[in-house]
Structure formats: structure tokens, C-alpha cells
Length: 412
Image (cartoon, rainbow, N blue to C red; front, side, top):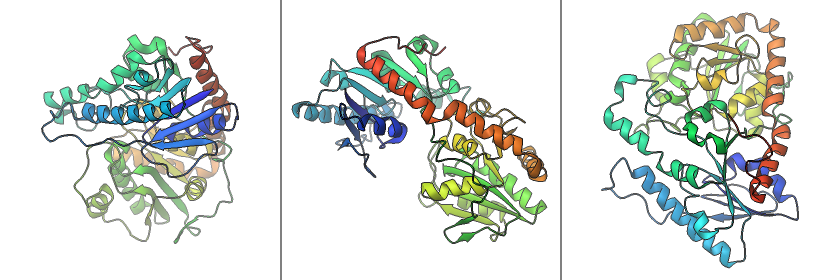
């Protein structure tokens, strides 16, 4: 089978499935992306780049669509080059939203298209108006709704689609659900596993003498992932608990939501607002996978907050490590964490209540091994890529062969 993967960032959600398919000498695997930070054995990497950016006079509702079209043109040219070289995919697996799959069927009309649908935009009732409902005007609502244009094209032209969580599926118009499979891409629960002996040392940060370690670990520090709320709760706890150290993993940048001016960041803002003890607040910056794993393993409690939006892999990875997690009581988190069973939930917008929930866990940490065990068990049963990978491979094989619907029943 010949497979073409399309994603702006290599390898992203396709890391495990691309590696497995490329290991089979009967398959030819090509991955097209904006950048290739490392290689996967057997995968041929190609780079595509839009030939220009958006124009200043483009209507602001249409800028995301223009970016998508420019991306699609770059991918289309790449597909023509692949075709000239003799590569004709049986199936194209593409992340939807950036436009990379909009025109691929023009280049490869016989190829089946399997899209990964991560997020469908709504102005009301999900992420956009969660933090400040009053700030969203009619112009904002129209702009947000218009961002779905590339997704709608993919939903209409794809042969089949994959959605990782039930909450994310619920955001997509129901008329399309009959051609979508609910299937998470999974995490490596053999790599992400508990280690009670993990040393609390990361780079030049040595927390081996800390009585308690509260951790926040996401890609960026932003309101979408509740960073201001976390920091306010952490500041309260640091005042109450002199042995508590707070470890923040990630970059001081906004990955999701409204960007800040150059040189500004929510990390800087929250430190300036709260003035926490610098000897007990630690910023690691980006970490290697090995260092990040250690953080999840040695943390006493890990906080995870998100507005109703795409769920982070890091929450599942924390579960797999048997972490004690206090998560925001929002829809995507409730799908994964059952309060008092495999973790704990607290209100996103109530800093005092969030701090109190963390404190309850810290006060009873020695009695919560059953929660740790249940956390890992839930990660293995529902999200282990060793279990999900065969389903993903079967889905690709079915769609490539034209077995629609696939052998696994469509999500409902």
C-alpha cells in the first residue's frame, strides 16, 4: 500500500501509525509537512511551503481561509511532483483545518482521503466565549464561524474522517457524523509509566528535598489552558504550605487563543501580579521527552486546566504515569477524569475552590494509591496506542480499500 500523510507539523498525530506502516517493506510511506525535526525510518519526507502570506487587504473573516488555500496550493504542487516521480497513493491521511488536503483529489483522483478532524469552530458554547462571554461581539462571531470553511470542504470531500474524543466529535455538525470514526491517536503507555524512584531533578533544578511538588505542564502558558487561574491557585497554596514547590513546564508563549505583544507572556504577567517566592517557583522551559516523563513521575500533584477545547495529550500521559491530577471541571476533561475515581475535578473559574481541591489531595496523598492505579488503568484501557494502533491501521486499510463504512461501526 502507498500512503501519503499530510500535516503541517511532522509527525504529530501520525507518529505511531506512520512508523508502523513504514516498517512494512510492502508499503511506501511519504510524509509532507512544513518541517522535519527528525526522521522516521522508512518514511520519505517532503517539505511544502506557501509561496506567500495573506495580503493586508484580505477581509479579516477570510484570512484563515486564504492561508488554507495557499497551503493547499503548496501541497497540490508537491503532489504533482510526487506524481511525476511515480508515487500514486492508495490513501491520503491528512489533518484538516490548515487546508493541506483541499485539492489533493485533483492531483490523485483515485486516492481515498481519510481526514483527522481536530476542531470545529463555534462562537458560542465552547472555547470562544468561555473566558469572557461579554467580550464576543457579532463581528467576532461571524469571523469565528467563517474559520470552518476549509473544514467544511474536507468534511464534504473526504471519504472518511477520524475524531479523537467524544467532546470534539460533538462540536462537528451532526449531519457529518455518519462518516466519522471516534478514535483517539493514543499515547505510549509503555513509555509513560509510573516510577516511584524518579529523581526530582531537571537540568539545574533540584527538587529532591521538596516536601510537595505541584506541576503545570503544557506547551504554552495561556488562558486557554488556565494558566492565570493555575498561578493564582498556586500562589494561594504557596502561602499556606511553606514546603510546596511549584514547577511550570513549557514556553512562555500563547499556542492557543489571543496572542500577546512581542516580548510579553503570561508567565511574566503572573509573576509580576503575584510576586511568588522565586525560590519555590520554577520554570523549566521546553523539555526533552525523557525529562518531561520524569516531571510527570515525580510530581506530587499535577494540575490540568482547559477551556472547552481540544484535549491535550499531556493529560493522558499524566494518567499513564499514575499521576494525581486535579483537572478543570470542563467537558473535555470530564470525558477522561471521573472525580474521586481516577482523578479530581474543580471549577475552572473559581481559584479558591481549585486551590482547595489541590490542598485536599496534598493532605491525603499517602492514601490515594487507588486513585493512581485507576488513573493508569484508565489510560491503558482507553488510550494506549498499543490497543488503538491496530484499530487505526484497520481504519486506514478499510478506507484505502473502499470499505465504507469501515469494519468498525461509525461513531455516534
